[in-house]
Image 1: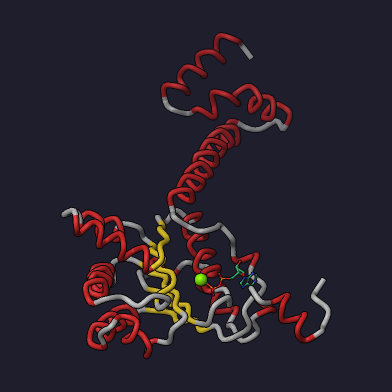
Image 2 (image 1 turned 180 degrees about the vertical axis):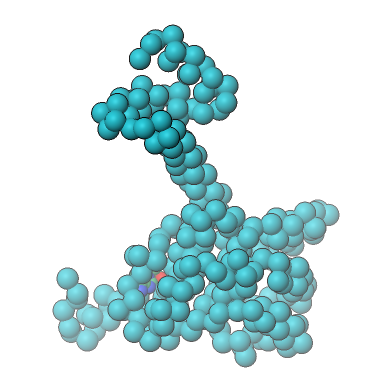
Length: 256
Ligand code: ADP
Ligand code: MG
C-alpha cells in the first residue's frame, strides 16, 4: 500500500479517535487482499473490528466499576448440584427480558446455595448486553446512605443507587436494620419501583423480613413494591461451600 496513503489514513483515524484502526490498518488490508474481500466487506470488517474493541473495553471498565465480588457466569453454575432449582427459569432470566421490563428478581435460600453467584452471573450478562450495573450488599448500601446523610449528601448518594439499570442488593437479612436504615432502604425501593431492575438475595423468607427491617409495616410496603413485578427463585438445597466436606461425612467419593 502507498505509504503516503497509509500515513494519511492513520492520521485521520487518530483524529477520529479510531485508535485500533491506526494500529491495524496494514494488517487489515493484507487480510482483505488475501481473502479478496469486496469494498463493502472491507468497510464492514474495519468497523466491526473497531466496534468490537470498544465494546470489550467498555465491558471491562464497567465490570471494574460494578462492585461485583467476582465475574462468574451462568455457564460456570452447576445446575446438577441444585436439582430443586428451576434451571429453565434461570436461563429464561438470562435473556434479560426482565431488565427491559424493569422488573425484579429475588433469590432466596440458605447460605452457600449460589444466590450471590446467580445474581452476579445475571449482572455480568446484563453488563455484556450494554446495561449499566452496580452490586452492593444491603449492609454496605445503608452504611453509605447513612454516611452521606451525615454530611448532607444523602440525595446525591441515593441518585448513585438509582442510576444503574440493574442494582444488585446482596444479603438482605444477614444483619438487622434499625428504623432509620430501613427507611432509607424503603426510599430506594420506592424510587426504583418500575424505573429500574433490582436483583435481591436473602437468606430469610419474605415473612421474616419484618424482623430484619425492624418494622412490619415498612417491610410490607417494601415487599409490596419489590414483588409487584418480580421473579422469585427459591433455592432449597445443599451448600456448595460444604460440598466436599459433605462427601467426606457421607463417605462417598468426591465427583471427579
Ligand atoms: P450464597 O450467596 O447463596 O451464600 P454463593 O453464591 O456465594 O452462595 O456460593 C458459594 C460459593 O459456591 C461461591 O464460590 C459460588 O461460586 C459457588 N457455587 C455455589 N453454587 C454453585 C453451583 N451450583 N455451581 C458452581 N458453583 C457454585
Ligand atoms: Mg451470598
